[in-house]
Length: 447
Image (tube, rainbow, N blue to C red; front, side, top):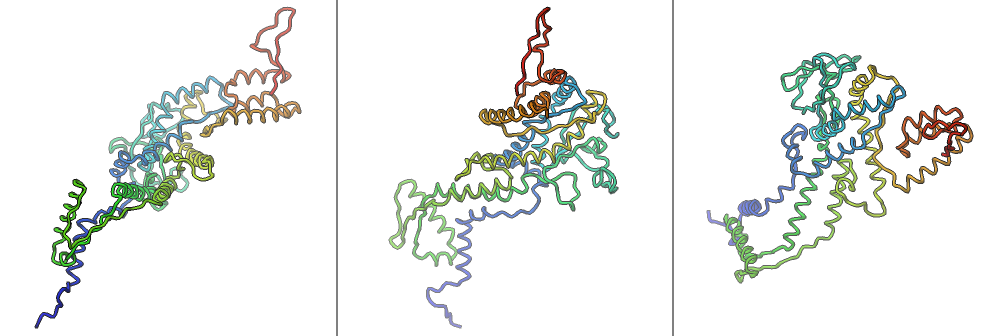
């Protein structure tokens, strides 16, 4: 049979193969923008630790939230304990380095998905923990250090339902569940019965990957702000004949010559032109990617990226919402920890666990001097009217001032002095006794 192929006709298969090979030579970079998640990030400890070491956004998400949950600490109060006992309570907290320990535990919990806090006392760790045992120290354990023993508790009436009754630490030490405080960042679905939760980076990882890819591509555009267009005579025939490597090499040499001599040498049959790239809209696109990362991390742009609020917004509302979110995390994550530790400290201080005691987390937001003056003035006017009407006493007003933090220098002795004052309006300054034949110096308390 005679060959009926027309002169100049190139088989489609050969052309496709050549273009594919050329793509792998000079266009493979595009593949790096693709991201396919194949496993849970929380279960990939090596990847989490790499992200912690290399990615400042991951570090900030974990450390910033942990710091904000602990930096203002809390205020413990009790009507059953005197000032000396409350001071002893705070001294034990400092000895245990409770604030620093919880800050560290929260940081690693947010990264790994959860940690365990082992309460070490003088008793055998296999025995249940009770209030009469003094805390010696608190030990932070990684998820890989802790394993459940036996099967999960299936007694729906048990306080330890769906948890292990005993745990093994590093495959050696057996401990009762009451001595191990599990601190999880994000709870897993109910169907997943695992000891620890999900990493706070889990819902952020996909959008963070896209943001980093976008940043890398923008950086490439800035360095390659011009596009070179080569029109080569016989390109199609060269691709079909398997000479794609020669073409890619020739382009590299041409670019090298142009870069070093600022001149270009081409065959007269070939053409070359240069097109400049414009960067309009790239900034807005980057801002959108940042907003997506901040939304996934549940942190405002002003905190995560240090970026000022745009438009007419001052950013104050975003900060307020973030502080409310931190307070929610304090209540859901930190309060259960204190529910275990506080009775042990209280028993060590007073020999019993008082029934009338409580604590509140101190607010993150602070009033400016002008705001504080305005609030204090409003409070004074209202309080004075209530005192004059006999609705409240000066002792109650002073207690409220101390509680609000507007007058942090009010001491318990000051409150006791007001409470013991018979008429509720006058008190003897400094407790000085009046001189013989004279009158004690008194001062009218005006609120």
